[in-house]
Length: 291
Image 1 (cartoon, rainbow, N blue to C red):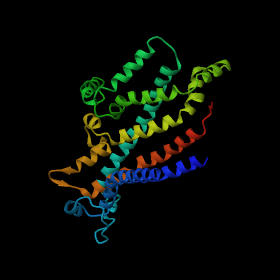
Image 2 (tube, rainbow, N blue to C red):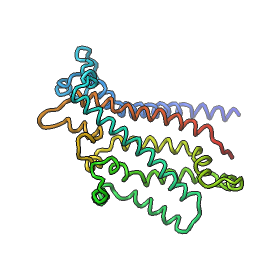
Image 3 (cartoon, rainbow, N blue to C red):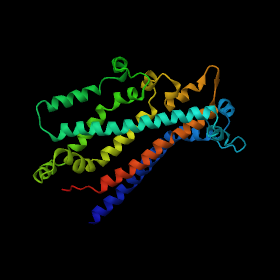
Image 4 (cartoon, rainbow, N blue to C red):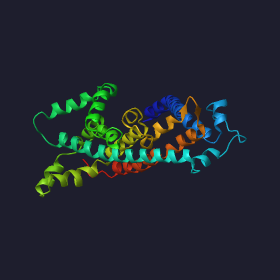
């Protein structure tokens, strides 16, 4: 017993050093990640001329701090109306994309996981194979399809190409494969149909998967610029990233709206993360199946 105690004491300095190094590493990483956000937040309280003169800086200078950018953003002027029109478009596209992607990918993964049928593994392999194809290669045939279906300059054309996402299907399948199939057998013996089993029994158990994929899908859709830029033609249908990009032109840059609008644009993703984080914790701690 004493030998074990002395061994623990001998190794304790090593554990302390490892703990300090690990903590220091994560502190540095957090600082690197937080710097752009903090710099952008401080820049949103400075005039656009200060951003041009000093760039992104994290020093606090009360003499240059002002709420003028946010007053202009919410002032009801022409730039403000365009900004909130783009904001509304992004919210609509993101909300619909997240709902459709989660539902469609869940049911595809459910079929590939819970049912044994011929060529099941082959079909799943095809799904995985699509993850290896860069979007730039798929972009042209997808664009030709959108033209053929007359979906150019429509929100449907932006949304429909991403609702069946291979990585989301893969994530759902891996999560569902960890659930016991005895649940399905017991529910069928009790007379439950397949829709009831998939929606009322299995879906609630998949809350952590829905939460994780909901956050990733929302972030990807909210920040997407290339595909919406190809599909959407009218300025009244632009999403927020495209709209903010139009503020940077060779003839003038409206940094007052650009910086404050970019910071305000983070808010929906932050709220979505907080909401889904709650479901992640609840889903992880309230597991209905044990053992």
